Image (tube, rainbow, N blue to C red; front, side, top):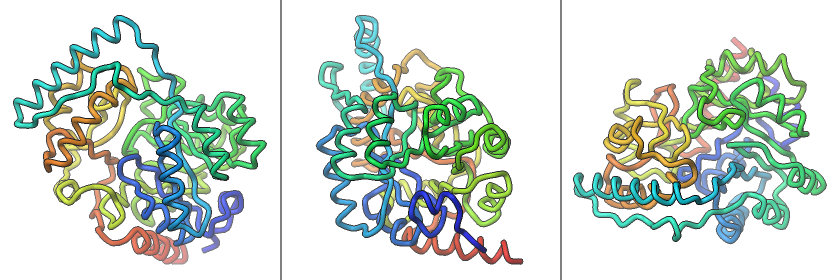
Length: 357
């Protein structure tokens, strides 16, 4: 099988397989393992402040001899109005009470204690750290940021969940699209419409985007073996983003009790919810999700995300599944605890075998 295509050429990789930038799961060791396998490692910066972004970029460079991508959130931040302040206080009180009911003592931050980070500040950090591949989600970069990065020779990868979003990104000068299907784990990258997100399955969306744009496409959502990878290739993908397949890997930041939950998951356990972060994300339902989803106790992103962050940290430290976030796509499989290197090598070998038969 010939893996060489426009994606491998633009990203300087051997295989057009992209390790998904899973914030809270992906570690520098996972990025390095993917990159050293000949795939593209992706380091999630999320909404980290500049100083923390620099630290994780440099930690990854220490482990990685090959190019890797950095990924950031490019959402707008709603202004803190009187209405937001009042609702934040009410949601905070509700969540603290809910946690106490389930034997989890936690003090959540007041709204004035939150650190809100604008992505524009991170662009300068990325350029200073000489990161030449940047992917992003939750929106589109503004024109100034695109020009800054492009003038630095940076390859830009934007996330879309609809044909409309794909066209917006292409017309903005983005180099590569990451088409995210509805079945994908983690946050939806939707930005053209945030509340009424496009509910389009990936294998329906992918060929439509392929017909609508002329730039290369990476597909994300439900790829977990050779069959699903080759199906995405048939529908027009030139790159293949792998996320949930690596959740149980040796380099994953998930704790042992979270990895054990993966082994027991059923299709009815996986839901799309705004309860944990204020943006739609697909993962495993638990006590918190069932108590909050569909209620008035959800703030707009990033306020809900910041509010529940301390809750989730405390739950993780206490081995409490009721209040953690385990993001997971719809394709259930055996979640290998092997190294990221071995998981990707097995996927590559299986794909080659199936393609040649």
